[in-house]
Amino acid sequence: MDEGAERILEVKNIMVGYKVYEGELKVLREVSFYVLKGEKVGIIGESACGKTTAMKTVMRILPSNSIVWGGQVLYKGKNMLAMSKKDVTSLRKHNLSMIFQDPSSALNPVFKIRQQMYDIIKYSSDERLTKEEIHERAIHYLKEAALPEVERILDSYPFQLSGGMKQRVNIAMSLVSARELLIADEPGTALDVTIEDQIMRLLKTIVEREHISIILITHSLGVVKGFVDRVYVMYAGTIVEVAPTKSLFSNPLHPYTRMLMDSVPRLIGGGVPEGIPGVVPSYLDPPKGCRFITRCPFRMDVCGQSPPDLREIDQGHYVACYLYNEGRS
Image (cartoon, rainbow, N blue to C red):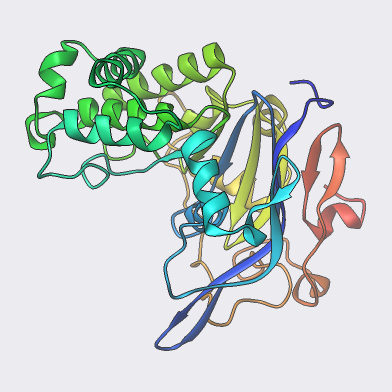
């Protein structure tokens, strides 16, 4: 990927949380990342590490109890967090879209696929379309998502389709408005592994053919390894490592990344993998310094004093860890 390419999305130091009965959950702490035009970026981490919160911040679809303390979400240089609802809606209509984890909940169960496809096509178009034009576009996008018997699909209710077919319909719908950036939030997690593989292959084919940028949110190391150009590793609402995919898997630097990889079962050799000891810290009262300090076997006094900055160790390979600030690895 050409580092000189346009940064279609740049997120700078966003700090996001939620108001709950017990207090305020301080989830995202100064999270920053960017996506180049045509780039495939992965964001990986355990459940509840803040991946989806970051993407909902980008899409401006956070729930009503959310708090944005600071930061910027720059889409082609314009801060989406400062945009009017009208301008954000225009971006969602024409430039970016999001595929959600559960294909069933993303579709309205009381309407046929035809009505839902037609509605999103009309919504995303600035021109008045005839019924024939709307139908032709619906057929086109369903075929783009590799769906067979598209007329039958259009006349089906969501419950009449398999999980894999529903996710393909969601992909088709997202393609209507994702002309520049597509966010895929664990698109295969709710499906069995063979269907997940088909969905990921389909997404890769589409984004490469259409030159669409994509952010893939996942907890699966295998999915990331075979799909993206560059990876951000998240832990407890912070970015702990950033690297080109090949570099990350050949030389993981952060203790969390290493332990995450060591916890994955292997088909041949290696014995029983060890899990990461301890639990993720509470967002009600997260550690002042590195948020991995409570589980890290290499922790030092400095780790609890202030959060480490991301530091470039190799070309394009950054890590937020005091082990490397001390010149050790």
